[in-house]
Image (cartoon, rainbow, N blue to C red; front, side, top):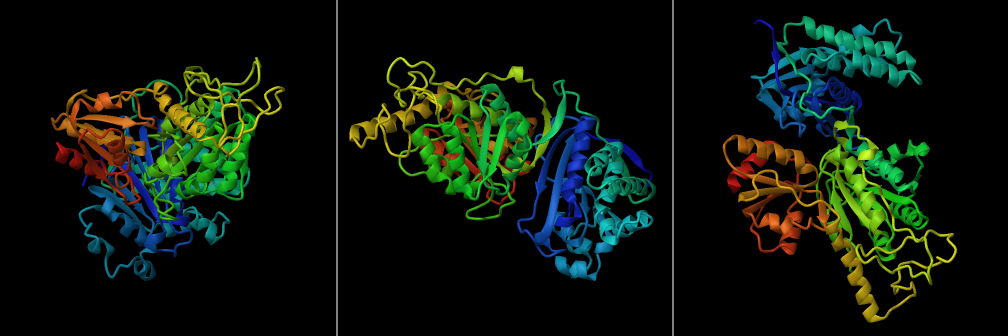
Length: 611
């Protein structure tokens, strides 16, 4: 069979192996290289839920999927064109994601009796998985890596840690990727602490590339041209957690307020705290607290002292923070709470993604305690979402919950590095001029926000706390005053609708069906809607970045459609919220609660059924 070089618009590659096989690094390198090359891309790291799952078992499989294209890429892809399986368990766990035309690289050294037994195979894995029609590329990757580094002076354990680079080299050959970028990254990564590892890893990458170029098992190679329809500018690959951290730093710069983040490490939100800790030079202070409650309480203290205050967490941590979040509502202090959602309840599946914290964000506090709720919709959008959450918190003197997801926080995509001149100023309502006694809960007639008096300002001495007070800041248990303050705190959140963007409709403003979603389902729904339209059917789409309050034109948008299909990664929390707020419309639901993102084809089927 003659080898062909094929131009294609997009490919999906999935690297899978044991947690120690370096699949996350391999996938990240391939993605970063493709971003620099100019491709559109989206990634999906798929971590095992157990910290120390038995070696070689399905529960210990770690995967990283990357979708690259010559046009805009909105999802990591449903099914893969290439699967790299470092052991039998990786093959078994991921065979269901193979396209009919897929290639599969397997490390034959691991497909021994012990490896097959641990993965639960009784015979030939290819036959048992019924994947004989795919292109199987057997390679003794472990042995070949040992041969490549036999003169390196490294011990066998260190040599085996390099075998992921061999597979990366093979993938670079198959998809016409230049390995020079990999060499530059390795030099940067190991230059300070492990310079002895630079040459061995570079050699293994090159040997993997050359091995793939010389064997006859690879029928075709592919070329994916750079994406030419993107806005011109400087791009970099960015994860959602990085983008959140940088959006917070940008808000700190624009507001002139130092940033404080008090948090407790929790999967999958920890990387935000880690990223902020790097940037002390940008007036960011971080505190790794002893628990979730201490994290938010230190942040509230920082808000009282005049900082842009942030706390980061996931679903279980948000539960623990609920009482202190009520304190932030009662004291009317600016606070950003970032919840990177994961599968629950309780500990659940901590490395898997879901959208199951929405009800908790909306209602999970005692008393009448409304909180502004926003959601990021892509890894790059996390920057804008974090910036806007900070702006709202600071200018409206309130806590804001920003919902992200494990899929967004760990996933990545190209991000156009913005100019800060394109972002609005942030102007907190400082208490600056004293014309009489200072009343801490007197409000701006337009925003309902109170003044922010930082401790140390002469004449602005006041008390805030968890007990109800009147406008003068005096403790009050008067029933009429309490009713008034409850109403005013709710009105302050409701009036945000005058300061947030209106809901935009992708497609006709009237029709039979409007598909809606929120958060990280954006790319999958957009791709599904595009496919349905390509088949000749008319459907519109709207995505919610602002949830409480809803955009002020939401009811007007909904009036234009016979049916509204709500797609979300939970059992129907947003749909229930909409039925409560806007009950007169016909809502349909498509829900998934599997700890995994939507597949585009799932949504295409749901939309066609609704039509």
